[in-house]
Image (cartoon, rainbow, N blue to C red; front, side, top):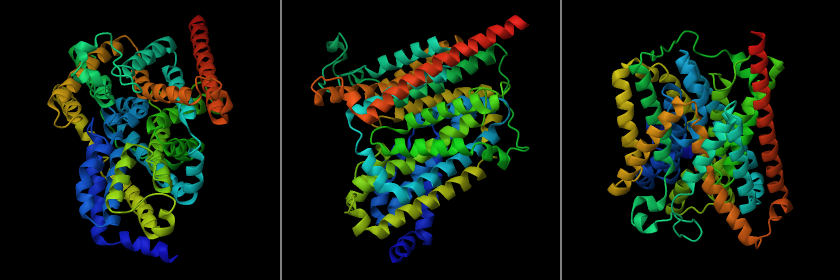
Length: 516
């Protein structure tokens, strides 16, 4: 009890709370700008955090982390542009809700979901951190490769009736992931290495510029085309009755608990990333809405359904607490952002790991309490901004769309910082993929499978090859691991369900057209 009070006392002073407020506001603004991630925000604030007291500096960095995660949902919902890769799934239903005039309702639902995910994962972190951390230590290369394979099977689910097109786009995303050098031997894969040597292409394509191009620039070009043809009408966001009734969230309690578990568990696996968690939770929302009460009149996910916003946002914020589990318990970062947080602790002379809960227990409690306050302030400022954020939609589209293009290109340029050549290359990648994405949208090809393939391709390849090296080429290593085998069976079941659902939807559509 004394350690708990001492930990709270480290945070509960006006100066520290002021830094938490600053961190949350900075994070929300940062997350709302496409291309600027939570990791970048924490890295920018690291020099300042080092000058502060250990608990105060960690509190500010955690506040930036929390704010950036929820801030990414703002452009995802209002503009159809994810602020970072973890907000991709939110676009699927968030943007259609905005087009229906329910953007404020979607933002509020995302905020409530973020609170559930943030507080829920914090509780799991406080009570089960050592247990979950020990379990995630069982994840070797074979288990991570199988998990990446499960993530790739989600492509079939999110493609819906466009199954063949979705698989083709996923394959294209994988091909983008394999550009650049071999990650193990560092030899060039392209047939003309002499041409690419010394150029940014030799390092492959980065995720953030690709994300900005495929979602931001392509959507802006698509809207410009619709504006030119007179088919674009700016959405009018209504604030009347914008706060969803409590029964709406009570109806989704199982989905939120499942998304909380998925986000915390995936976040606790080092190197897994929140992208898998948000798509797994979105896939779970698809199956729940498809089977709820057998109501065939219920709208499909992807057409503007609150479940499609709530599920990925719960999982996205739950990954935050999940990633801190191995970071604090084992000294192993769960993602890039927690790696920077660990660096801040090490610079301050604090060594994360099992002894942290013995030697520095007041600091652990201070971190937990700071994360709690960060989640509360995150929700407060997000709700206060609900009436401000949609004002961007009041900007004339003839001005708004060019601004989106400019900020998208600036965001892709900023990824490399001072490396002018690489930054210019990233701008070119974003523009090229944006033009490609525009033509894909016009021909009804899904975009998300490309990004999913790009994210998971590298993870799958690296871990598969490491598993093969450790097993000396014995493929049965995936069958001898209970975790890997369970993931493989889940992947097969996911593909089978997607194929069955696609055929069932086609049969229902054919039957419906026959009745007409």
